[in-house]
Amino acid sequence: MNDLSWRGRDGREASFWSTIPRAATCTLLFLFALGVSVFAFVLFAVHNALFLLILLALSALLLALLFWNAWNWRHRALSFFLSRLPDSALATAAEGHFVKVTGVATCGSVALESSYEKAARCVYTSTSLYEYGGLASLFNGGWSIWRLAYSERFVTDFYITDRISGLRATVRAGFGSKVLPLIDENVLVNTKSKSQPLSPYLKSWLAERNLEDGACLLCLEEGYIEEGKRVCVMGVLKRSEDGIAIVEPPESVPTGCQWGRLLFPLEIDGLILSST
Image (tube, rainbow, N blue to C red; front, side, top):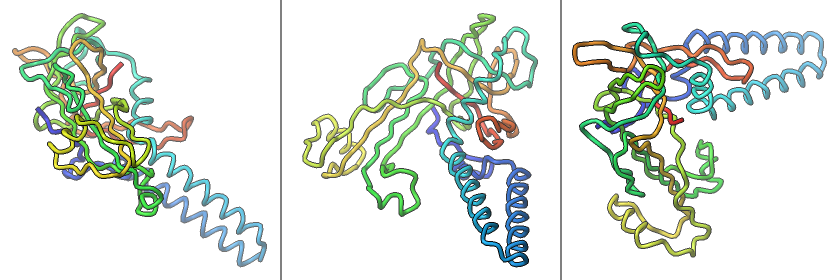
């Protein structure tokens, strides 16, 4: 079982900037610096306020583009990348190639149980608890008025039956593997007011994790993949005497540009796991 936290090759938690290829980042910064220099030179030489307004407008567009990518980098950009690639057939896929396999998931030697709903025989579970932070969350550098107070994600080795060839492969997503889940979480608890009493079950769940059950607004979300559900996995194919396995890529895999959706190129570091 893997206590899941998607991290980069340096062991730190992956962030938006760490997934952008260095060449793309340098090119973007160079073009921005060049544009600022040209407009500043023209502004001082011509003394026309119109150029200053154009510079401010271009800067605002660039900030909007960065905000759009930072907001969507982990889910939307990678989902687009995943959807545009064709499925691979395990029967004909070559050893060591990057493959996308879609099929039914089956538990291996270890099965998971979701934290709150207690869904049994899962291959992946995630639970997130958010606290209402108000405008203070935005001023402290957050992206939302809701602050993540607690999160747990687990994934384990499991089997996937290829829908094209019918062959079964082991997905090495357990201990030590880097996995990037693209799994939506459903809202299970959403308190509407500070005076709304919490259910005894929610209070017990919070107490088990040493979390306070104060008067703040709470939102609890949970997602999981149960045995028998259809999933999509992207990774590297390995063949051995023990059978077929899908493992994390040894190197980062670039997604390429998605300029039609205004998304920067990213580098994937680990297995991609998605429900279909």
